[in-house]
Image 1 (cartoon, helix red, strand yellow):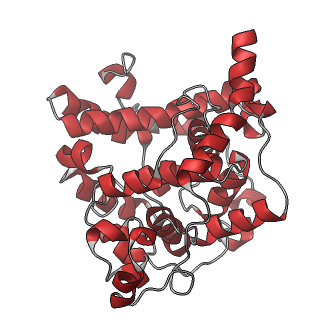
Image 2 (tube, helix red, strand yellow):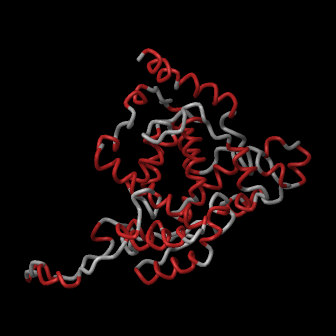
Image 3 (tube, helix red, strand yellow):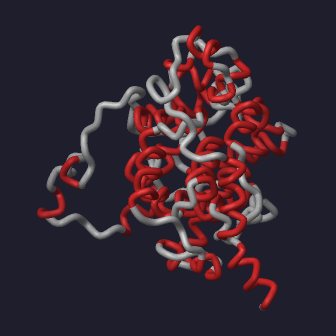
Length: 328
């Protein structure tokens, strides 16, 4: 943030240097390959994203009309709070320098939403720097001591992983988030943290498994950002949260989707549940569930783990890191 100023964010007159580029050979003048020729698959998603610079510009202008609310709305998945520009940054159809310049100018004018958004853009650059200077993070923990953690393995672990991927963990906010990812190729940023924490610290599964699944599903997949986010969630990264900070999926749901609107959108089978129960359906009585047309295990799964018990197992699992740290 200290480094960012008008000089570093200014655009540069490159057109006059175009003549210095090497001329294309006849072989290089062939038409550009289509998406499938370079390894992308055509998909039918519930919320298709328009590609290209014009679409990116329209999305950017839409965000600028509400950027002043970004700091207050970005954590609530039922609200139109994020910029939704990450796929355009990933594919280069919008200039990161231009977005940062706009955010910086507005922050200088006192707009809190722009200031917070600028810090998020800087996190993106930070993770690129981490990947460049420490390429080992692609397969290893940034903090090597975390590679000693013994993650759950075997048939039961595989069943837990599949339940997480398919959005049937029994925790509505986690499941709604995973269904959003599977249906649209996008997941709200707050929910990326919640689902990642759940995989690592409730299910006890290796963060690399979740990272790989997100890489397959996200339209905005970026190796540096995806890796950095997952290492943050598992407490193994250079900007790690403490290992003992574990998201409670129910309290996260109550805080960031208080009316259950996001859950209702992606888990219609729970839409009839009253607000207090939709965050934790297993707390409702059989008669209350029946009145709402819900039977756990038939219409919606019961929780595959008990959060409080899983938390204790995680603290024990991560104790190897704490013990080594004290010994060092």
